[in-house]
Image (cartoon, rainbow, N blue to C red; front, side, top):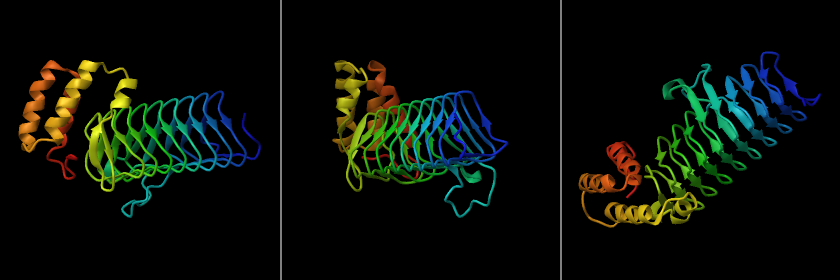
Length: 259
């Protein structure tokens, strides 16, 4: 299962049923879980831990030093969960001491070709990053987010669950859950209705989300008033609690909430 041309450091921990293709390089302080497949010409540098049943396609660079001038060789980490796919030429950097020291990727994510994930990013579960999407440092992506091709996300941005960006979006503000954004710079367009239907949100929940969307993006009320109004609505529709809490948490952050 290990091609003879692959170079694997003697300190690396390789579990059962791991495949490593031709000319791939596995460095020191790397641990790879069972069932993971590493295609040809992949470089994985440590300290990096990789869970089970992941798939790394050719020419990916995983666990390289962060692209941060404040980084001076500290032993920071990259943690990857289970059942993720990294397509051709993905680049994923480890964390920095100033950013918590860890870049973390959860489970069941699809990272398409030429995607860049910078230092200290946190990606939860069931996320799709389409070709050439790029995340600057300290970006947080919640569950079931889809970022369209060539989406650019500025540093210290958080994107809420079930959000969606169209191709070529440039995101410089925090994106609440359930929202579809588009443009350079990105602006809220609508709810991510197709995604919400596919994920099983019923018509009553979607109706409440539409009402909250209008409160947030189509009214002239202050953000504090909107937070209060959506908070009252969330008592009737639990699905809105995540939307309300996100806006409340990020309303006074440096980047603010898209509106």
